[in-house]
Amino acid sequence: MGVKKLKTIYLASPYGFSSQQKEVLLPSFVTTLQQIGLEVWEPFVRNNQIDFSEAGWAYNVGQADLKDVVESDAIFAIVN
Image 1: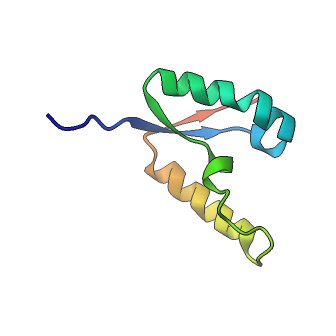
Image 2 (image 1 turned 180 degrees about the vertical axis):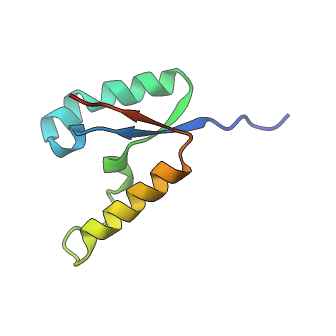
Image 3 (image 1 turned 90 degrees about the horizontal axis):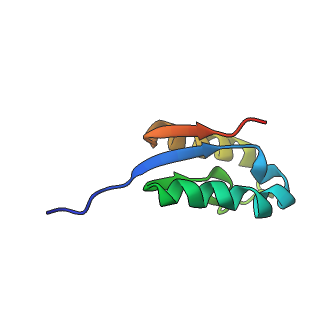
């Protein structure tokens, strides 16, 4: 039997913009979603390879996020 591929979920939230929320709140959401068998795509982690000092960085982040949204199986949004 083949390896079962986890369903991917794009975790949309404002928590990555705040270092405190990124360190305190965001990990519990990621862990909980992983514990129920999901592969979590958290955009602030997935975009950490982008050089924010280069021109066009915002466009590159937007394109990477769009690609992840399209390729994920679902979107989980934290709205507060």
